[in-house]
Structure formats: C-alpha cells, structure tokens
Amino acid sequence: MSIQASIITRDLAEISEPTGNIYQSVSIISKRARQISSKMKEELNSKLAEFASTVDNLEEIFENREQIEISKFYERMPKPTNVATEEFLQGEVMFREADQDAK
Image (cartoon, rainbow, N blue to C red; front, side, top):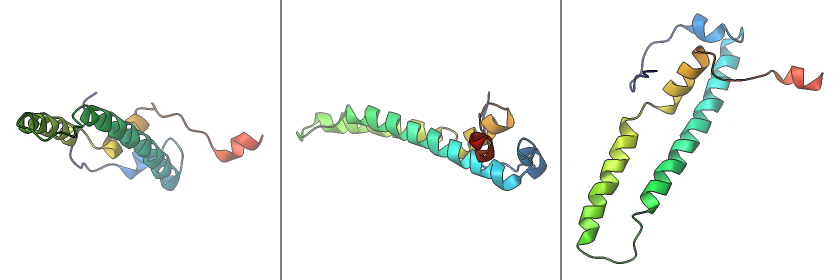
C-alpha cells in the first residue's frame, strides 16, 4: 500500500460511509492516528537512545550524523493521520459503538 506523505483531498461521503456519521469516522481515525503516532515515537526514541552518551568526544560528530539520518527517515514517513485514514478506508480498522457494549 502506497500512502502519500503530503496532504490530499478526501471525499467526506467515502469517509462517513463505514459509520454513517462523519464525526464518528473522524473520531475513529484520530484515535487510530494517535496509536500510530505513539508507536512511531517509541520506535524513534529507542533508535535514538542507542546514541545516548555522557562523554563528549570527536566520535560524537559521526553519531550525530547517524541520529540526523534516522530523524530524517521518520520525517519522510507518511503522517499518522494519513496512515490511519487509509487504513480506515480500506476497512483495516476495527471499531464498535459504545451502545453495543451495553447489550
């Protein structure tokens, strides 16, 4: 699946179709985007933690280049909202209404 990294125009009818309500669909997409964002942040922090050092030396310049490359890679990735929206439209996001839980 190819997801664009930039902003694209979406059809509101297509987004609201799975739930019948645009606001509910946007709420589901936003919750999924937060999950994706949190996971990406954890991955980035764990990769950058490998470079953590308390000693200042000449090797630090080389390590900073690697840190910059890792950070740039994550910056070029599609935004969590785009990924979540695409997953929602493809039917890959599971959701249920609160009313169904009470039954």
